[in-house]
Length: 326
Image: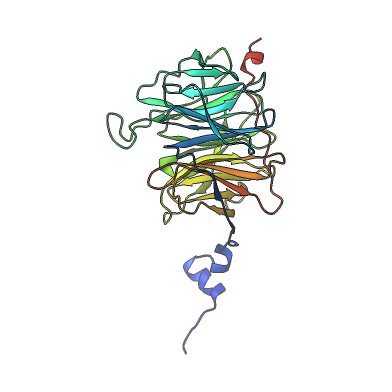
């Protein structure tokens, strides 16, 4: 007799999971469009200020800071900073108060200033600079570093970069018990008790418990970028439902990840640009997604999407470092 086992019997014999159990629902899709032809060499770190009703972002290697109120023409904020800028964050205080992470200095800028104030120098690690950064829900700055020569050169492939937290005392607290190459995906959900993080060359996004006091703990894997997609996870943001949005630099898309299951819920394409670098929510109702991009090989513009399905973002916290040390 010819034996033809069914799928259930065959799965028991060879110990595999039936295809129906492996398959996840296909993610929904949307397309962002260019809204600002800013031609940034390396656009990064978009943040929306409800206080200022404006979007800020940097062009990292050019040392430029940009601002846009969504109505008037966007503009570069004077002065040029003379250093590679890894991030811009909102700073508590008067409208236009900002904190910037430069390769040579951590800077403060107030509206109308012709020069930024140097607050401190970054941690002395050698061959690194500030890269990804977000203010946590307690108003502290969390800043990740970047191995300048992680692809080639003196520190090629070296895990020599750290993740730090600081207030106005600038006593840098290293948060992780390991080093990495390229800090990215740092973001926090609404309650602030979780932190997400990625070392981009690993293509893996991790979650950590993030206690109000103390260091992140209980690392676990949330999502791994598929091997068929080029590039790796870059900047990220959380929405009001707790999902993670991360730009996949090299893959031409931003993905919305369910951190509980690791499934993709939504894919946002950036047509004409394979190199989205980061994203955030903005606009009066926090229902628009803004995506920075890199110029190479094709890009450098700011993309925008009216987010479908009723999804909204979270207000961006302000760095209250001065208050925390008073």
